[in-house]
Image (cartoon, rainbow, N blue to C red; front, side, top):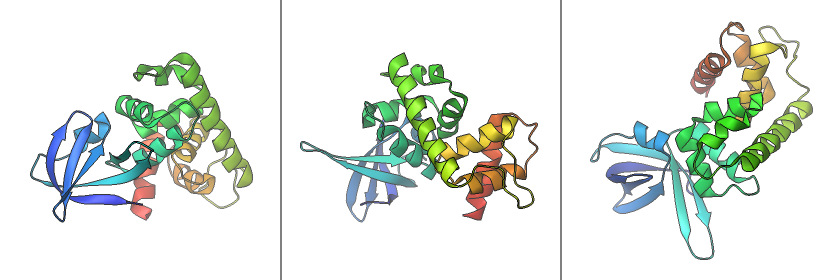
Length: 201
């Protein structure tokens, strides 16, 4: 319903930012990662948003990046992961680190977040991995014939998996990672590929 809000940042507190747009203050629940990227009160700010309508409340969630919003949507689509837990995970880990944890099957990384025990963390990793498998199998996998595209091996394959978790198609992820040195650490590959994909968008 609301894609984003842009205006003067008039109030900030832990996990909450209020942005005034056209005389209306939008109270957005935010992650600690987003809070660290906000300017000072009185400056212009923009957040990508998602609205959650319940019987007893209407909540607005705000994110500094589209990757964080996409990660939040994927997390909260999993049974047992509500908005509070989604915010908690993304306050502890960046979207890239969530994606890397899923790609590597490292559920313990998710248990650093408040409210996430080992069982829930394992479910998150399994369900998000299943979604990635469905996406990659429907697009024919990563091994594509066009030049500069990576084959599914080692660090590069993990980086492609992570980018797919973040919402990119296997083709987009493969093309971006294929332009990088596959000997780089997985996290570096993901970060650099994201920069390329952002420029292209």
